[in-house]
Image (cartoon, rainbow, N blue to C red; front, side, top):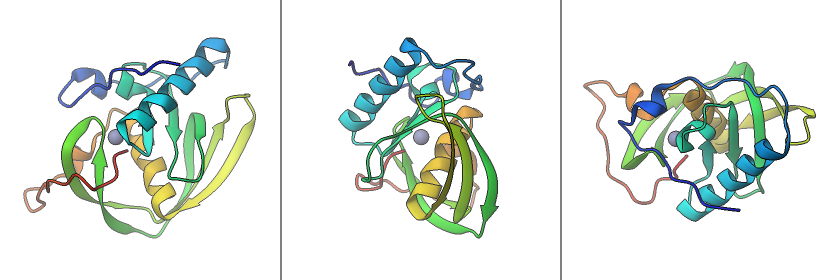
Length: 159
Ligand SMILES: [Zn+2]
């Protein structure tokens, strides 16, 4: 396993859209485990492949319940809304209040290529939405409006 370099805003690489993974082989599994290692090293709770310069629809998440590796994740359903502070490993030292769905249902493939349907709420739902934004080239700074302030925080979880 190896740690990867995390691309930082305003690196244009972060604005490209990811592509769906066609088949999950050795190299995809290696990328997923390197991404997990990188996320843990940087103290994040989620990381998208785009953030390490790989334009594939792959994300890793661990909110404290163990590693989840998601390939080609798609949100099927959203419910409710909630505003909370969010940080991002690609936008260091910043956090922004973002309104997101409270619950989501997401379909993805695990690293063995099996289809998984997950119902997530709270922090997990938020991280899933944040990481899927990355796959579309979207960043937390895009949620800024003139009325919203960027706060500086070292304690906000980074996704
Ligand atoms: Zn992020």
